[in-house]
Structures are given as C-alpha cells and as structure tokens.
Image (cartoon, rainbow, N blue to C red):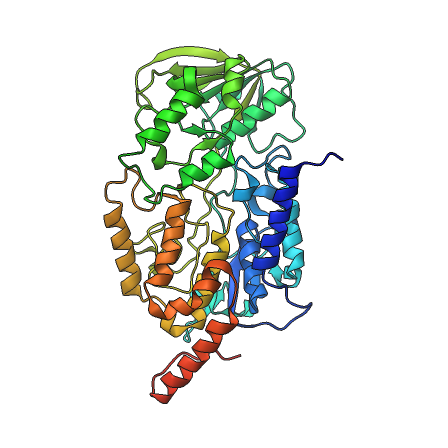
Length: 501
C-alpha cells in the first residue's frame, strides 16, 4: 500500500482528538445516574448525543421510530453512491470517529454511526419501532415519552434532523410520460447508461443525482432548476474560510468572496450564479465537478419552471437570469428517457413537543441558541431546527449542545430562565436585524461558536463548566463545586429541586 503523508497525518490527528476528547464508554450493563435523558431519533445526531450522555455517566434512552435498519437516520436511506460533499474533517460528529478518507461514502458514514452506537453500549438503551407521538410533563416536571411505561426523564433531546421522507410531487400529466421516474434517493440498482436524463431540482440532491448519471454513462443530462443557488468548491480550506464569517450574515465585505467565486470558480458560467442573493443567505452547494461536466457538454444547467410532463420529456419554461419564479420565458420541450426528482425530503415535525414550545413569537428556529425553547430549558432540539448555514450539521456542536443541556440539568445556578432566554433571542434579532435571511434562518459555524462562548461567559456560575461544555473535559470539578454550592444553598434555607433515584 502506498504511503500518503497527508492521510497519515490526518489519521494521527483523529487518533489524538479521540484520546483527548472522547468520554470513556460505560462498562456493560452499567447503572448510570441522573439526569436521565430521552433521545428521540437514532440518526447521526441522536447516537452522538446519547454517547456523550452515557460517556459522562448519565442514563439515556433512545426512541427510534423505525427498526434497526434505520440506525443512522437519513444516511441509512440514501443511495450507496451518496457521500459527503464537505471534507470529513468538518464532519466529526463525535471525537472518537476515525475517517479513512477525506470524502467518505454513505456506507462508511453508516458504519461509523453503528460502531459509535456499539462502542458506548447503546444497544441496551435503544427502543426501536418506538415512534414518539407526545412529550408531556408530570407534576414533578419530569418528562413522559408517549406514556409512563417508558419511564420518566429529566431532559429531552429531539434529534429528528431536517430530512424525513422523500418528497415525491406529482407533476401535471406525469402519467403520460413513457420513460422512468425516480426520486434522487432511490437510485441504487438503476443505471442511466445511454439515456437522456432530466433532473428536476437545483439543490444538493440535484448535484448528487448529476454525479450518479454522469458516472453511469448517461448520453446527456439536463438539470432543470427553478432558481440559482451558490456553488462553492469542494475544498476544506475554502469551506472553513467562508464559515469564519462570525456575523452570520451579509456584510459590506461579502462582495469579496462572491466576486472571487465568480471570477475564479464560475468563470465563463457566471450566468448560473445567483444574480442578487448573497452568499451568506442560504446553504450553498459544495461541488467542484459540476462546472467541469457543463463545460465538457456532459450536462446542461437550465433555469426555469416545470410546466408539465409530455410523452417524451418535460415542457419547460426557460427564464433569463433575474426573472422571478413563474415569470415570463420561452417554452420548450426538453426530451428525456429518465426523470430524476431531486426534490429533497420532507422536514420531520416537532409537533410531539408541548404546545407551549411554539409560542407565536418564539417558534423554531427562534429558540435559545436555536435549540432550547424558552419555556423549557430541559429540551434541546439538536439539528432539528436547522434551516440554512455555512458549516456542517455533523461536528462538535452536537457534543457542546448536549453538555449545555447536562449543565442546565445538573447545576441550578447555571440554568437560564425563560426571561433571559427570550432576551438573548431579542438581542440576536437586533444584531442581525439587517440580515436578508433573518436572525435564525441562516448562520455560520463561527457564529454558532460565538453563541456557545457567549452562553457560558454571560453567567459567572457557568464559568466552572467552560472546559467541560466546550471540550468535554473535566466534569468532576464542576460537579464537585455544584455539590458545595448546594450545601451552602441548603444551609441558607434555599430550596432546590432534588432528583430522586
């Protein structure tokens, strides 16, 4: 086997991070302490959050709506050819993860999730075929998942993600089409060899479908997109640089990366770049090959609206750059043998949570640090309220959010009140009042990091938790301080909620 120094260095770095930052797995059949956490969903986020909980000595139960084949969430349901569009260094959803390459495929991702699940003994703490329909509180304020037979919990992590079932829209006259129609997530076992392929959609699913049809030898491919989205290079250095915009919105300097992308990346294909939407308003697509395919005439990127299917393809309304959706254009029949619906996935619903989580002015994602509903600091909806970002949904923030929840549950003096959670939301809205996408519908990873640091720094009683919350190291010291604080509080006659075993 050839020696690759960069890959060797990356492997060594991953090993070091794992040794320094991974909590120790509990012994088999260990009786863990409280707070007890209910994790809803056995996808990447749920498994990662649960492993952090048990690694720090707290009991957890995972409720998964599907069977064991659904372990891994959306990654368990997409094509085998699917893989990461961002570099895996930005997809370290747990410190113990060990990637063998920069851009792992779906099978390696699922394998890492399953290994993590087993490493932390979560098999005995997972309930499959257990769809959650309601989350309610008893008189003591403990959480009941569906019914009391499942036990009572001190905290809840709804880790249902942002991708549920595939969106399968029925387009006008679809039954008249003589060719094949598939959703972009259902391409295993299919081939586009020698076929004229039409891809409906212009997001990340369309890019993935384009890679599939080109690699399987399609005769021609046309992507039919309703609007333009920013496309950025598949380069870890570039992606990290863009995520360093700590303001999480368009600024007076945003034109600089936008002009650089158009000049050196889009070049002669600037026509398919967004004409007015800024780079820091939505999630960009990450791909370095798409422009090569267009320049090589293996693919065409067409802007416009789907009118209807025809017997031999799609009736399409071409629109010029800048013309809004549904605006005037030129109608044309785009012929094809196969249509791929790159129409994405339905967003899972958080409606099983208590109604007071959805106050009129404080509905997700307008929650405290985007995941804590102001009425309930013991609910932490990691990655379930995400809308748009430049960054990643599978990185260290999962552990940080989980440890914030643990800190709130263990330390009464560190808990945020409803008043201050709402004040933080109002402050963030004021800071981002000029953001085109709103205060919470778009953020960057550096802005998220700022939220974490601010959340810890603003309350002196959280300072003792800083190292633990931000890195996962050193839980014994703050817990010892909390016990001493409790003794002082009890000596002063101050009451606290006691967690009975």
